[in-house]
Length: 503
Image 1 (cartoon, rainbow, N blue to C red):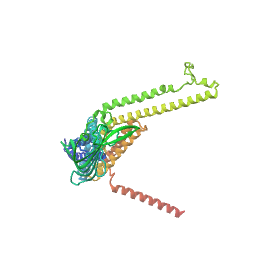
Image 2 (image 1 turned 180 degrees about the vertical axis):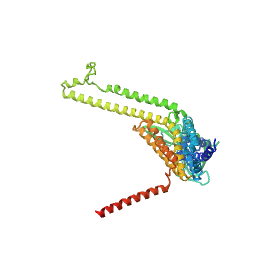
Image 3 (image 1 turned 90 degrees about the vertical axis):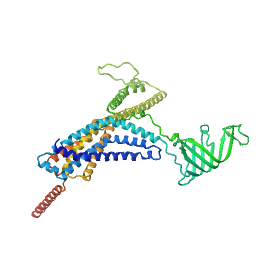
Image 4 (image 1 turned 90 degrees about the horizontal axis):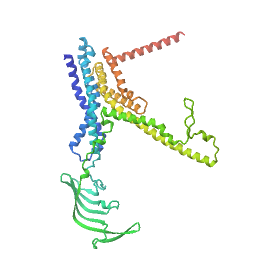
């Protein structure tokens, strides 16, 4: 390896690693902020969160690689230009294209790596990450009882406290409604009132222990043979008398132990998520796309034959050979019939019902066919994006390297600003191309490659400008053009005044 290649690669790898790490962190934080409501108040261990963030960080690498490639190549050549190393190489007869050659091979390697990573690792990371996220979302929040509000997340219990003692697990004025399976649908059959109480977990947070002090337990029971010392009540339900026993007992201390199993995170079968396009590689996406296209074509082909069942008569037509079709019940026969008003009303009613059925049939099938078309386009877009995201790494190199040579500014100032502009342009064009494809305005291939095609042309243009030592981003060039334009305008006005004075 020549010294010039070492110089360029040394200027490139440092910013590349730093920018890739920063961009991955930024995209990861975007995901965390988006799902922050699902994380709070969940009693989930640190290991689960670490796994979740690792999966999402792995899935963001292909998105971060183009931006890292653009920013690092722009910074590398910007630093070389700012410290006149690029000028010295040019004065020694080395062309800009030759200086860019080592990064050219690096960009090819990163693109190939991005393709295989996007095809093999990202679907697996998405499957693991989103299935784990679903389990976290469906996990109940930790026991968080607020003053004056009934807490109903504990299965079988509704708990309300009037006041919570600060820095303690003691609560004042507790009301507990206890529901069991036997009393389901019968209202609140047992109520416990206590002046104070404590709540804490035992056995490694597996159970919740509730200790109540100085209270009463009120319970209504369906049993006519209970102790006669209890207060006896007779209630009616729908006219039929049912005997119930009402029991009241007073306690100085009452203890309950409740299982916290419902608050544990339960793992869901990952096969529930593998059918999403983000969880599939190119091979599976091809199979799914082919299946959807076949269903789409089959639905179109069967539309006309299946609609015949809604017509009672046929149209009299001749085929290409001039012969009549097979004998049948033809619409023409209706025109020659003399019918009464009652028969005519029946015919009109039948025609109206048939038209309604045909309209419903056409609407349902149209929606079904359109859904299959959109689904097929979505899966094919996902397959093509595995290629386009990889190729965009190379396109960003073609933009970043010549722009750095033209701007001649290193550091994180101007390069970051320029990189953000082109990355947003890449993102907007990609979203717009996908939108046109889903709306049926563009072919899937054209829409998927729209962003890369436009930016590739921009990259080739910048490479050509860098080869010719263009002063594309220097302020004095545009000031000079502006002065020339002002002078031409002044000369034009002077010529018009002179012409007017002579006339």
